[in-house]
Length: 96
Image (cartoon, rainbow, N blue to C red; front, side, top):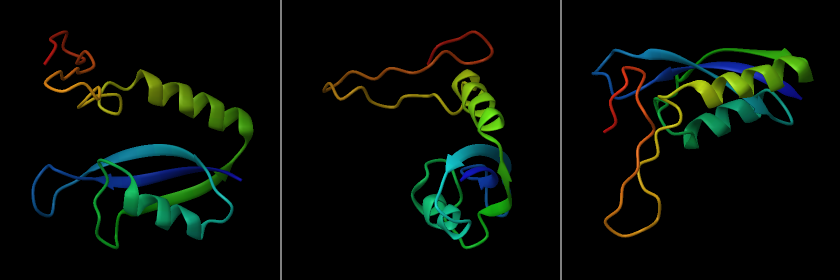
């Protein structure tokens, strides 16, 4: 099943969060909670999930495309080469 899940994103201070929407393929709605525990940039407490709804395949594909355009979700911390770090271009035009 295709789902659109909204999570609380982390690393912005205690008690603060930002909303991040992710598009997933899961077997059941309870699997979304299991995925959230291992997903990067998502709060790891028990209240990470804000909302979750089943969507069509077309909505899923459109959402996955939007995820590829989001510079925050596409930041690469390490390319696997020792001493070499590569980051996606930030929305303000600078590279880190």
